Amino acid sequence: MQGCRVKGRDVPPALIGELTDSAGLLSEPKLLRDRLKEDGYLFLKAVLPAAAVHAARREVFQRLLQVGEIAEPADAGIATGASRRAELEPDLGAFWKSVSETPTLRSVSHGSAIGAILSLLFDAPARPQDYMFLRAAALGRATGLHFDYPFFTRAHDQVATVWLPIGDVPVSDGPLVVVEGSNQFRDLIDPMIGFDISTDKTRKADLGIDAITFAEQRGTRLLTRNFEAGDIALFGMYTAHGSLDNHSSIGRVRLSCDVRWQPASLPVDERYFGSNPPGTTGAGYGELVGAKPLTQEWHVR
Image (cartoon, rainbow, N blue to C red; front, top):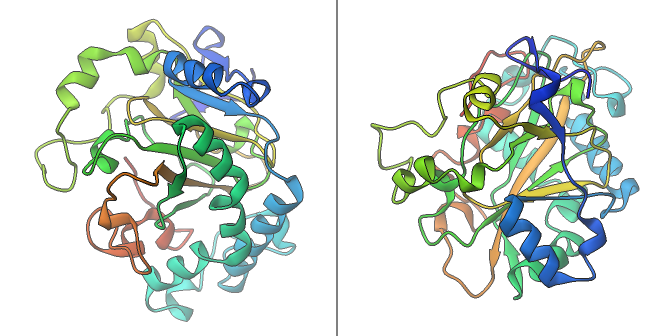
């Protein structure tokens, strides 16, 4: 797979692989659950209406066009390199919350199609967290390798992350990458049990190593693919993941979101539920990278 980069380096062919499509197992829930348990992730091809995903993309980028960060036509998602966000929207957290709660986006990210899939996996009715991690990643940006456990398991660990590309996301634009077999890395997982990132400030959730070096040291591969509108990927709290670099040759912004789901019968982590969820740190949507103007430098977990 050509075009995969991490920290400006091309990923060696031996270290890259393609996520396996498990959409064919949706009619066999037990096999689907077994696949998730074995691989630590599921990639599901074309399980959402592409037109609905493109409509959500248009809606989000139109909001960013209005603050000068995206050029016309909004659907193309090309960054201008400028921003009037801070000038026009003094409360950046409130602005990003409003973008994250646009109806067309929520109808996809929190809709019945994804809900039905998660209910199959949990073998019980599922519910999503209200708090959404909406990510607009411009040229040069990437997310470092991490597990989700330290962020979302305060109430329990029966939580799944759904990664949704909002539009087509080729590997050049920096999509999700999953570390193959990382759900079996007990030497990393066992010491992590009980770690809550918002209460333990002595530790970092980021693995502290770039993905290429990590894959080399572990003798494993980085799994990704060219995503298209309608695809989703999902994984539990014990699978290491991050993203590739966005090195789009035309300056296209990678648009995606993460939403966590859990069995509806289980206790909820109040940080991520309700009409005004406080988020991981208590700062609400203002704590998210997405709340910063698109031209601003940032670093992520």
